[in-house]
Image (cartoon, protein in one colour):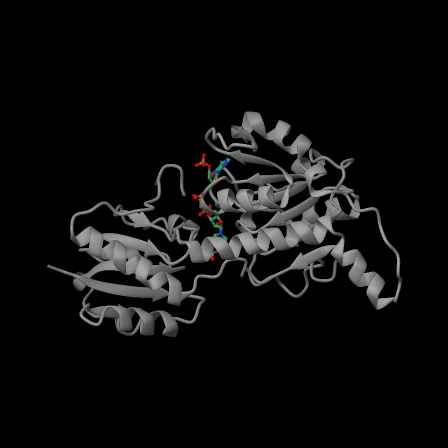
Length: 316
Ligand code: NDP
Ligand code: OXD
């Protein structure tokens, strides 16, 4: 019976993953794409990050695919994705990293840190009016594994937090909205918008000028702010720039972009009110995540259900 695990990684350094998988599962036949794939019929499992389209269709005995990240759009956008279960990473290591990013940038905007950085360069000792967190409305789009943890941390700091998801949710102390019908009311109260949505046909381009105009600008935060750590294809870069230039947005923290790496010619790089990071809000660390995948395979082979399997119809 085929049992080999193929590691197929594109865009990240595969070496630490391969070393960790081999160290943690010395008894397992572990192959590495492309050079050590061997006979395609031997491959039962693929642990993948951005494999080339069509690759996964090559394995006639494939039983399951594991995304090495929380997002799965790198798999679902492959028209040749086989019909086997696709499981994704849900792990406290990754979740806590994302919460750090969300809290960092929410506080940077709330405490006007970029303004104080500019004042520091000019040696200006001037204190701006500072609102209390309880008076600032933060809205989190996406109440999944990452969104829920970010909501809890933001609540803990004291922000007035709301959330928006596809299906209805009840979260004590958090105002929740769902579906397209709930979006406008969610935006109308939101001053700092945090996007933690997956990229699907339904979410593509959702962060656009029309949406930014619906955010609350007259609240205690002193304007409307965007934080996107979900996926780049949620956002229209040109609309973010227009919104910033028109004062519709007062600032943006962007970890993800429709084209990555962000091209050097993008005006976002030099915009004084934009904070850019290189899609590292929550990196996948092999030290933490290899055991997660191996545990899933062991459970699967013991005929226990796989966890965190995506809903192919919903696309995440
Ligand atoms: P989950 O699948 O757990 O949660 C997704 C959330 O988005 C759910 O609440 C879901 O609603 C909501 N959602 C999906 N589609 C829609 C829609 N059309 N309208 C409204 N809400 C929608 O994902 P995670 O929280 O684990 O991860 C979220 C995303 O974060 C990943 O898909 C990935 O793109 C990104 N990510 C980015 C990283 C980075 O470093 N920048 C690192 C890791 C992940 P419902 O609850 O109703 O299903
Ligand atoms: C992920 C990512 O999806 O790193 O985990 O973007």
